[in-house]
Length: 487
Figure 1 (cartoon, rainbow, N blue to C red):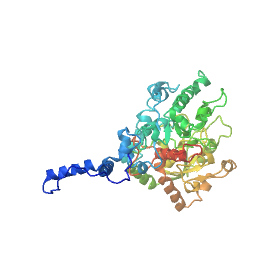
Figure 2 (figure 1 turned 45 degrees about the horizontal axis):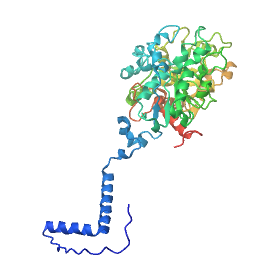
Figure 3 (figure 1 turned 180 degrees about the vertical axis):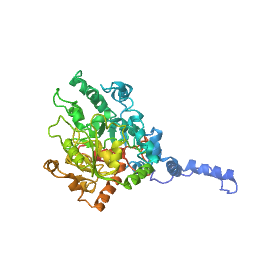
């Protein structure tokens, strides 16, 4: 812009001017034009003022989104942009569009996932499995359609389906707080675990390839993986092989996996990047109202037995603790109910376990083949109070999903005390009716956090399920991690 002169006005023109006649518009226009022509300083000031007014007017007329740094946002992103902080206070998630050979292709070839037969029915309905019709005479009719024969290893399929429709998903990686890798790690290694025909290289192949693919993406270098996460549908020990001849893959020990947060049904309690999330159960409510109906049902259930145990012995284990629990329970049949799961008696299509949990105040939860077992969540969803014998079975596993105070919802009896003759019945009978009622209320309160909702958009009325808790937890820790991306 040219500077305005500080010198005196130019000399008046010699040409005579007409007087201003306000009633004559032509006379006014001619005189006004003359003023502009012969007084350039006044003209420049006027033009500057007009330009400023036009700029202010234009800025007030433009929509807010016009000032965005990302002017070509997808419709779904533009819709929530005005309230993104309110809708997604912890940030948004970007889903990598990985090759189908790392996820969907496993489902296309579901007949090859197990040496014992097809898994197509098991992983149908986006991982929920087939309808659980056997519970029709056990659960209220209003929620019978919320029950499925869900496999305990279906987490990564269920999680992926929910993530695709997550309210805080973004299609713009530059807007993302965290990055989700939809790799089906459990299915990728599962088919190789039970046959000697496969090598350690076979078990590692898919994990090595997906990590190579992810590390070639531009946003990996933003924080060297600190803001990336994955759901893995098996226990952590299936991915922690140290020697080629041992069980599982070495996926978690691969360098690229080091900083990635891993959502697992059982975690290594000493690994910060392992996060324990609930095993998938058969209950998948479609709304907050269905959850409330179920909570009222289990809270008001009349329970006929003091405690129960559902499980099978491990004959190949010396001094098998499960066998000890079964013997105590059988000997105390007046107060304890048993569901012996030897063989295939406790497959996902039987209602016997659910009915037993619904009828018992307490349910015994020893460790499974590993420290945890799905039965913990089957038990709690039925409103039964879990009894633990290893602290690593739950207390060091699912901190995001269970109450902070373990004794508010559970009972702990050290396994050594039981092995030395302590009667489980004597311990449980010391709790008053009021104490049992209070513990059950706490269990029932936490049911929403232990289930994975059926609709791919989750529950309504602000109720959060296990998926919501897990993803929000990841987003929060990404912002808190030292060395992570700083906004």
